[in-house]
Image (cartoon, rainbow, N blue to C red; front, side, top):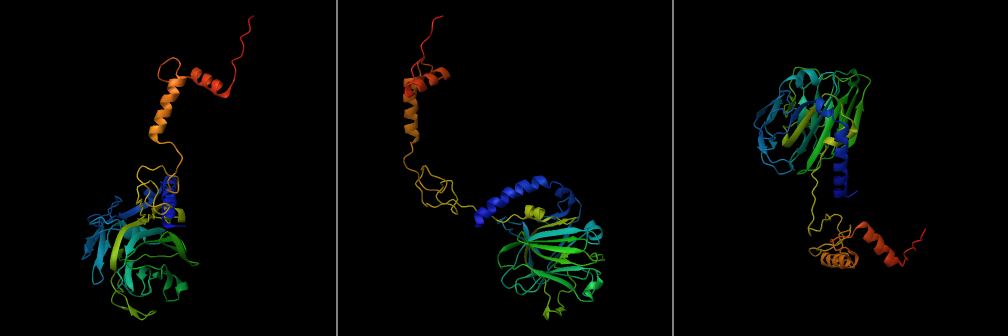
Length: 331
């Protein structure tokens, strides 16, 4: 499916889905559009404290509408009930957009972790090969003192991507650019209860060697925007409804048909076209249609009221079809 068709279908589906899942707004516990600040716009007061990160352009090129992290020591730490009521044994969804520079490698994205050791935590990372992974113990014996990991996605530098992670009881599900890319299911419920704060680039493992890879974990380097947290695991259709790719719609010759579908470029101005954007010949122009209407009025408007009434139209049909008026019988 081509990009523009995908975008069109997705926008239609988004409208339908948004109508069906109106209760998503009730389950939104934190929303950070990063429009000039790191405030929680959900109304729940889970505001962020910015340390070093700078406001920058978002994926729609709007100024001061996303946060850039330099990969050295920038972070945003969030306060409020999001730390005590959500990331515990409760279900949740985290979703956000990100853009990485070409030099990004083995980064700490988002975490809720109080120590760089085994425990109840989750740590969302970006790996050197462009993949994204979630590391967790979650208090599970099944992890046997080793991280329970889930690697997914294939991020491209200098490109905006969408990432969503849901926790539903014993299952963690991940979505990359609106596509379900991985699940991690155990026999026990994930528990992320700890005394740390939910944040961006605040993992205690930053600067420390990650043994499975032999690489030192670095601070997040890139841009993050539209971070959202829900108090339940959203469904695939609901994830789709909040994933809104930057659909670029271009109509170079202004004929009403976007370039992706236009089979005839540079259509002359004011041309009559078909659905493929190609000029249609053999049809009447507007002026020709006006002349035809005037002629019809001159011929069919028998009572000179500048319109053709029902009786006049019936009479015209009879005349043009050769129907002879039926004789009136005297009784």
